[in-house]
Image 1 (tube, helix red, strand yellow):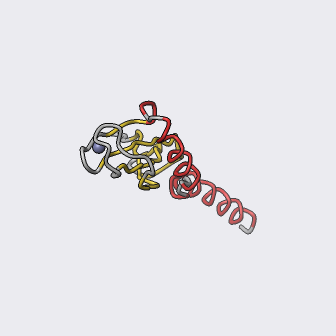
Image 2 (cartoon, rainbow, N blue to C red):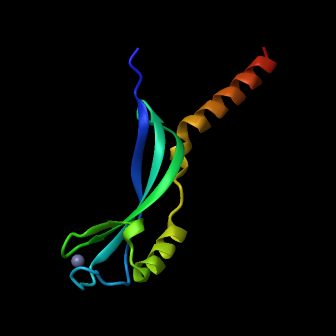
Length: 110
Ligand SMILES: [Zn+2]
């Protein structure tokens, strides 16, 4: 049987940064936060880590969190506070718990 599993990601927050671009000095920097999750057959099982990138709308420079300048760190903490893990990244775990509970209830009444 072919078994598809692995990690995927989804964007959970996007916000324009107060800091200007370190490369072109334009006020066009956006922060994007992604939630990575483990999937089986593309069905989310549980969330893994979050990652953040900055992207300049003018010069297209894209940086990962490690390369953020101190000015961008403040914007990073703001987006980190607003970004929540989506409930559906636990989908298969929730479905499994519901299945176990329902089968226990049904077993009690049979
Ligand atoms: Zn730029």
